[in-house]
Image (tube, rainbow, N blue to C red; front, top):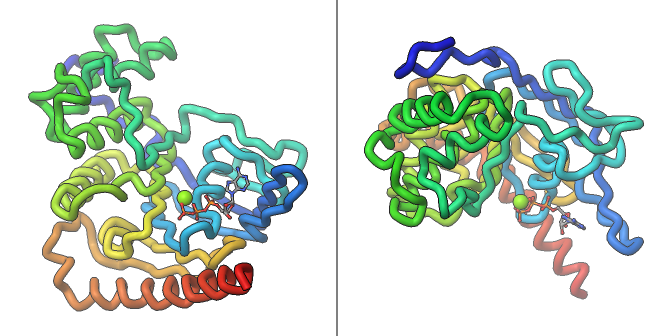
Length: 286
Ligand SMILES: Nc1ncnc2c1ncn2[C@@H]1O[C@H](COP(=O)(O)OP(=O)(O)OP(=O)(O)O)[C@@H](O)[C@H]1O
Ligand SMILES: [Mg+2]
């Protein structure tokens, strides 16, 4: 067992490769077929920060939900480290502690302190006793710059602090994959930039595989190893932008020409798809 006061090394380091193979998702509410994802394939390496961008309604959350096990897929297969999550005969992936999701709207329990929120998962799952879980939670919060607020309630700290605590809560179980759906969408630019640096610091320590959906192209280049631009609905991969900017990264790269060129490259592809989405909407209205 790890000594008190240290966060143990990750058991799942080097794991978390996701393979999305020819995935199609058709929603069928009351018989009206909605083709959300069509023959989409994507390989994400273990420990990669993979950013997903694309027009609104193109199917990004649908794909994330399939990986998380919230929604079934209609055709195709999704693998995690070579093991089938969902596919023929098993359209819905099991929900497991190896994949954790952080959504846009915070999900901390308001009646628990930040430390208790973070310690909650391992305690209820019986992985750690209460004392161990609390110690680990406080250590991890401290690593995330939240040393002094472990005993505060979510309503007593800033939204940025609460968001950071939420990521810590997601990471305490040493997941293979962190699935983030526009986690910083509603934040002002300054808070967002602090969130980015905090997330990158946590990533540099854990090297967890990150599947991160965003509409913010600067965010996607700043954080990502690759930015996957999706087509307008139905969702497929349109273009992959490789971000070969070395880590650790800080905000100085935002003003570099290399950074601007990558944002432009992603923007061109997204813009093309957004126009298609807009025109398709116009056709539907006509
Ligand atoms: N449960 C559902 N039942 C029927 N249709 C759905 C359902 N969930 C999503 N859709 C439809 O599937 C398509 C893709 O939705 P999805 O939420 O995956 O898009 P998105 O890319 O995440 O959009 P946004 O960027 O706005 O969050 C949309 O047309 C949406 O209306
Ligand atoms: Mg979405």
